[in-house]
Image (cartoon, rainbow, N blue to C red; front, side, top):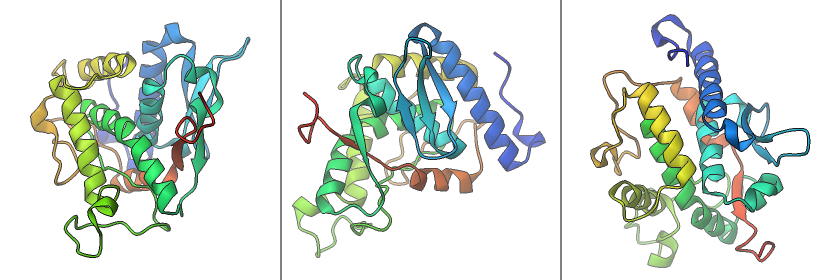
Length: 245
């Protein structure tokens, strides 16, 4: 593959585009044997199963790099049966979810956001856990807030972030399994971006919800990164709501 675009020679918007193109090429080359391609989307994310004439498509939101990593994470977790279904067997609940919808979202999102965190680490990118519900149930930034009982706190704000962190940590130390395809992609990213340096536990930063950087960080426009985490709509598992066996 060609080397990564040089951040010193490109404007932020151009850099975001160039590095997203690099990721598309990296993913499509890595998973050539899967008949699945990563596609820059102009709107919301979507997964299209393969047809007799077309490969499966992972379309990520609005051309954002972090959205691509988020959608890849869901694909990595999905088994063979889910990959035959539109949107991997999920339905989408937009921003503005009620408490029960938000609970479902967060329970489904712990594992993919943990995988997404590892992918960001492999790219030397900061990662921010996302509850993705700006206009819905209020987010609690203080887990000890007296207005929330423990049951409420377990699915809000910093506690959700801590659940994502714990799962990412468990995968790194071998207490939980990194999905096979995520492990494959992480290896490729580490080889190209980190000169083969593997991920380490010390790079997980639960208080700031971001990874540490190497001396040559793989960065993108911070504004784009913030937009990405509010651009995608929530993945809700149909299996949990009885729509898929």
